[in-house]
Length: 463
Ligand SMILES: Cc1cc2nc3c(=O)[nH]c(=O)nc-3n(C[C@H](O)[C@H](O)[C@H](O)COP(=O)(O)OP(=O)(O)OC[C@H]3O[C@@H](n4cnc5c(N)ncnc54)[C@H](O)[C@@H]3O)c2cc1C
Image (cartoon, rainbow, N blue to C red; front, side, top):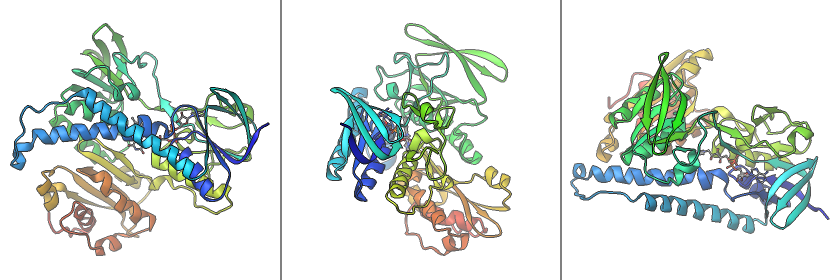
C-alpha cells in the first residue's frame, strides 16, 4: 500500500532539504526522496567542498607572503591529496548534518530515484524495490548537472567537469578553464594559486560576464597580475585529446590558434535535471532544461512545485533554499512573499573575491534610471591596509531621484561576507541618505561600504 504524506520533496539539496524541514516545522507530514546524497550538489560537489579547497589555496598564498607580515615560512609546499581529503571531509560532515536535521524534524528520508507517476503520486526505486508514495503536494528540487558541449565533454582524465576538479587525478601543470562564470573562475583561482599555468577562455567580451563591467575589468587585471592568462571573445572549437596532453583549437578574433594543455576544466554552465521525472506526461512546461514556474514556484499542475536549480536562474544555493521556505509556507497555508530574483546576491570566492547584488551600471541605465555612482578603493581603507589586502573596490549605484540603492558591486578581500549589508539595505528599501547616516564600526572593511555611498554624493572622506 502507498505511504501517504502531506508533502513529498524530490531531491535533498539546499532547495529540497530546506523545504522539507520548514514544512515539517509547520506540522506537515513530509517525505524527502534523494537518489544519491543528502545535501545535494551544494554540500557534496559544489559550494562547500570548493570553498574548502579555496581556503587551502588562500592559506598557501598567505604563507608565501609570510615575510610581508614579519614572519618566516620555509619549505612551503602542498599535498594535493591532503587538500582534497580535507575538502571531502568538510562535504561529508555537512551532508551528515542533514540526516540529523531530518531526524530531529521527523522528515522521512527515502533513498532512491523518484518519478511522479500522476498528480499526487510518486514512485521511488530503492535498493529494495519500488515504493509508492502519495501526497497532496509535491516539490521538485532535483537540481542540475554540468553542461556538456559537443566535443568538449568531460572524460575525467584530461578533461574535467567540476566533480573531477574536486577530486583531481593529478595536479595540472598547464590548465585550460573553459568558461569564466563563478565555477570556472573559482577553479582557475585555486589551481593557479597552487602553481598551475592557467588560461581562462571566455566567449563573451569579458570574464565574469554577469558582473558589472568595471568589476570584470578589475578582476581581469588582478588575475593577470597573478600570471593567469585571460582570453576573452574566444571560443574553444575543439579538443584533441592525446595520452598526456590536449591540443585545444581556440578561435580568437576570427583566427584559429592551437594551444597545448595537460588538463582542461569545462565550466560552460549547467542543465536542469528534468529527465525521467514524468514531467512531460503531466503537462509540466519545460523551457530547454528548466521547469517553468510562476513567482510562487507553481508549475501549473495542481499541487506540483519546482524550486532551486531545476526552476532556472540564478543557479545559487541561497535562492534554492529561500524558494524552499517560501513553498513550504505556501503549502502550509501561510502567505509568504515570492522570492525577488533581483535581491539575490552572487558571490565568487576567487582571489580577490567578487560579490554583487541588484543592477549593474549598464542594466540600471538600460532600465531607464537616472543614476548616481559611488566608488571606494580598498587602498583608502585602514583595515584593508592592516590586513595587507589593498586591492579592491566597492561600487554603489543609486537612483538619482529617489536615492534607492539599485545595485552594489564589490571586489576584494572578504566582500562575500560584506555584501549582506547591502542586501539587507535593499530588502528594507534603504535609500542613499539612510546608508549615509549609518555609523559603521572602525576599523572594518565595511567602512568602505559607507564611503562608497558617500562618494556617490562626492563626500567620501578617506579618498
Ligand atoms: C562547483 C560548484 C560550486 C558552487 N558554488 C556555489 C556557491 O558558492 N554558492 C552558491 O550559492 N551556489 C553554488 N553552486 C550552485 C549550487 O550548488 C546550486 O545552486 C544548488 O546546489 C542548487 O540546489 P538544489 O536544491 O536546487 O539542487 P541540488 O543541490 O543539485 O540537489 C538536487 C538533489 O536532487 C537529487 N535528485 C535528482 N533527481 C532525483 C530523482 N529523480 N530522485 C531523487 N533524487 C533526485 C540529486 O541527487 C541532488 O542531491 C555551486 C555549484 C557548483 C557545481
